[in-house]
Image (cartoon, rainbow, N blue to C red):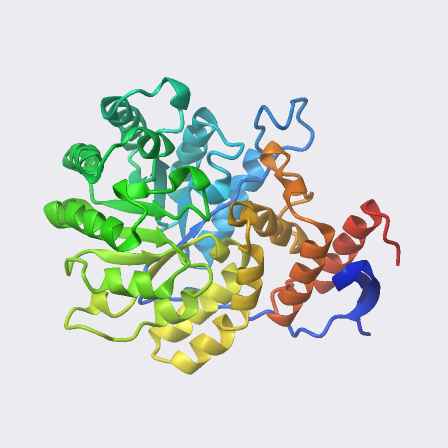
Length: 395
């Protein structure tokens, strides 16, 4: 029996929609990759907590860690306490550190589980940050706390640094201090201003090529302290250009949620393997985890056509989830987790479930179906109908 429901369409009208997707692809048990693949993971809010949602965060720890176990079971690593977890958009530093602690503890029970954790300066009162030294101290505080737990660092882009830095030299000074102190190689993090407007002009300039040169110079000065760099500029040509200029030991972790399939597949350019392909650190992998795992498994076997056949249909969904204002993409990620039964509610830290329209969710539902990403179609339809009814749409 065909499942159907009524969905909004362009112009505000309603139209019947019949599901047409097939069963989601499932990776084989013990799937192996030839890329390192981190999923930036979302947090599950506690909808029953007696808090002011815009001002305080309450996390359902069991459901949140349960989702990380799901990602590890698919062979994916977890990029913890990143922007996908609403870092800086509802999730404060004390809660982030508790999240990191719980994830690292849970990972001990999963052989081979990868965890890298976001280290930033978001605990600082940005209005009180006066100098680059204040930023350095902020990074050092979080570094010390995460490394004390045994955690690997993702050195997140800093709003405070973007605000007080006067030149590329200020960035060089900060990162030199941080990298010298790191106990193990870190992942650097370049988040474009489409993800966070407060990061405009990162690396000391709004000229992307000049910014890239500064970041490459920092990496070249500390190649033994940099595992890789994640860039999220939604510009595949910029990523490829930077990838080809990295030291041979430094990986490019694609953060391009528009073009990830072709960037991961790679172009084979250059004498160094790392110059011709990207690894992954992606928010969209949270929403498409089984497909991402299955596709990466096929790629590892040299089956490039099957890799693209699985991952290609997910790209339109990702481009929709990450559509402008891109910083609200977390809402689509959590919506997918709810549709697929990975959490019992569609409530987010900071009340962020309100950042997208019903039209947006309707199109997301259609694209998820087209990409064969609805893991439990009957449940997904019931939950979509619940959301529709909440907005006055019955049927």
